[in-house]
Amino acid sequence: MLRDDGDENEDDTEPLTINQVLLSVSSASYATQLAVILHSWLETGTNPLLPTSDESSIEGVTPEFSSRQRILKLSIDVFQSFVAEIESDDEKAALMATISLVDELGGARGILTLLGFQQTIGSRNLAPLTLHQCLEAFMQRHTPDEPLTVGARAFSKHCARSSSGWWGEMKGNDAAKNARAESKVKELLASSTWKNIHSLPHAHATMEVRNGLGYGARWDAETQTFRGFLEPPMTNGHEIKWRH
Image 1 (cartoon, helix red, strand yellow):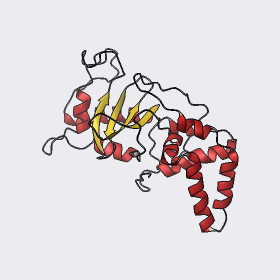
Image 2: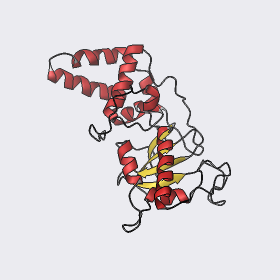
Image 3: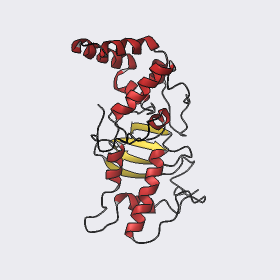
């Protein structure tokens, strides 16, 4: 179920950390991220999900904890047995051990949880977009004859909404606007403390990321298109046009 951009986005200069897996959209492949989580679990004997909060930080979203609780109950023996089979020369045994481990984790839902994706009412067990796919969708041209990207056009709608100036200013030519918008979406992806793949009313499944302040962005998880930026949840947001 996991998407892979190939080797082009793998960066071996610095080791991938647990926080980069759980609290960002990393450039590493999801297979690599999963390996980092499992390796840490084996090396430390501590479930990597333990330090993370058991509460959803997004107002108005109903959290589900069944996947997280299932994984927290797993014994380290499960992973030690898995590694023993994988390191053997028996390919059939290794395959069966992998299938068994995925089943113990709770299937696709468990893998998403280990990768830091939230489980909420409406969550979908779909492959998350890679960092490369998120950025590629963001940087598509809004119209074929204009250099302005779909991401920059969406970004321009949000700059005036935050009284704190969190979004920053949107000025300059199209190239400057594109660069400013790209910088902001990369900032969000690198600090996404909340990640989810869920259904919206009358829409495809959506991959949504938010930072600790509640600012975020969405992509269509099925068509791999950028949907727009998000303001922090607020009462009567639509009525006040999300100005805060």
